[in-house]
Length: 326
Image 1 (cartoon, one colour):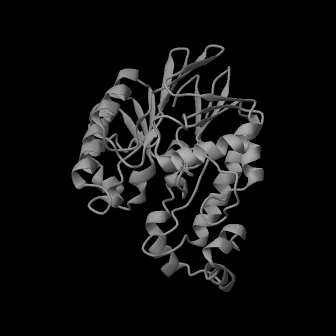
Image 2: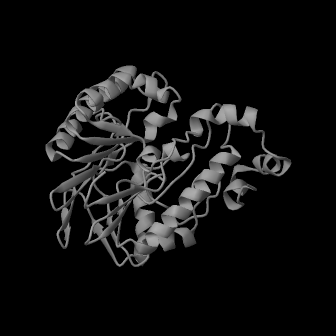
C-alpha cells in the first residue's frame, strides 16, 4: 500500500476478533499499535463460538510475535480490545500477566493519559496498567497531543477525541499519524466514522496516504446509538474516502453482517475518486472472516462438542480462569 512504510494488520474484525492491532515498520522504528484483541462476551444471548476462540488465539500469537521485534507500543485508550491487561481472562481477552509482560516489557510505551480526558472505567484501567505491565516498560510516556521522533520517522498523536459522538460516556481516544519520507499513514482507533465533525476535520487536515479507521456501529443503531449519529458517521466516512487514496475500514462497522451493502454509497464515492477501501484482511490479500456477526449461524451450523459445552456451563469466573477447550 505504501512503499516506505510497511503496515501489517495483526488482528481485526475481518480476522474474526475485536481489535485494530497493527504493526507499522519504517527503516527507523517498529511500532505496534493497540496491542490487544478480544471477543464480544454476548451476542444474541450467546457466548463466543469455538471458531471465535480459535481466531482469538491465532491473533494473539501474531501480536506476541510482532511484540518481540517492536520498539514502540501504543495505547490509544484503555478498552481491552486496544490494550492488554495483566489479569487472567481466557473468556473474552485471552490475557494474562505473562502475555502482557511479553508485549510491554522493555518497550517504549506511548499511551493515553489516564488522568485527563478520560472516563472513570478507563481511568481505573490506566491506573492499573501503570502499576502492572507499565512498570516493565523501558519508558512510559503520556502521548496526548505530542510528537515523537525516531530517526526520520515521526509519530504525531492527536489531542484526545471522542470515542464516537460528542460527550459520549465511552470517553476519549488518541489518533496517531506516522510520517516517513514523503509518505503518511494515520491510525484513528474508535472514532466510529467519525461521528464527531471536529474529529473529521483533524483527519482531513493530516492528509494521509493511508487511513486505518473504525466505522460506525451499525449493529447498535436505535439500540444503544441514535440512528442519526450513525448516519452522520457514514456521511463523514464518505467524505474521507473521497480524499484519501487508501482506507482500511474496520472495527465496529464490521460487527454488522450487512455492513458492505450499507456502505455502497461510500464504496461508490471512493471508486469514483479512484481510491480504495479495504478491510484489514483484504489488505493482506485474504478474504474477510467475520465471526461475531455470524455467531448464531455458527452455533447452528457447527455445534460445539461436549467438552466445549461443559466449559460454557461453568460460572463466568471459572471460564476466565480456564482456557476454552478448542
